Image (cartoon, rainbow, N blue to C red; front, side, top):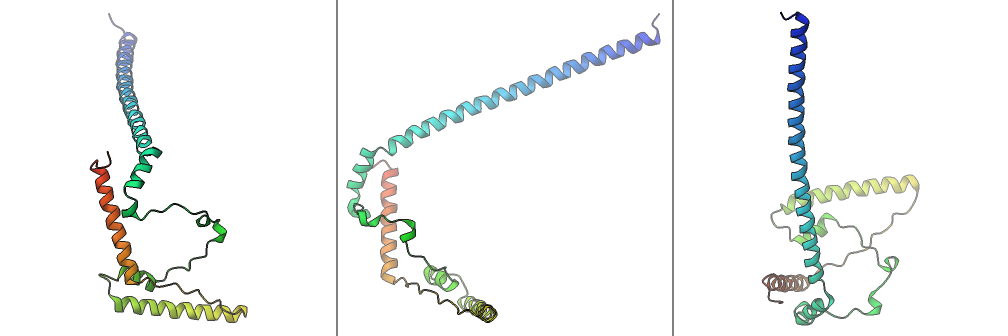
Length: 179
């Protein structure tokens, strides 16, 4: 009846049909995933377009002018003077911050001041010895660093007040007070 070659050919045809069905099914699953991703891309593009429209409404010059006039006194806004605009080369160089400067600005809350001071002294001593070694090796005089002006308590209070006013204005704007 059936020969061995017939049975082998039938098995090959059945396995080829099963493989074809599996490949077709996997392709359909992949196609569905592609359609889903394309739908997500269209949704994201629509959201981007909506956000761009919102941004253009929020940054309209007439609206910004109205807001600046409304909050001019609270923010301390002034018109820009032509003398305020300078090239980058005309700006003075700011000396690098040290640990002491950072500590003074932050008030050192939650930090062990004695330990930090001893670390800073050790670092300063090491830096001085390195600088002295380099100066002797190259026979150049060390360059003196420019002193940074210390901020006063009055400056800090004024800064905190401005931040508080800006926060209040931002809250009003978010609540729709500017409409």
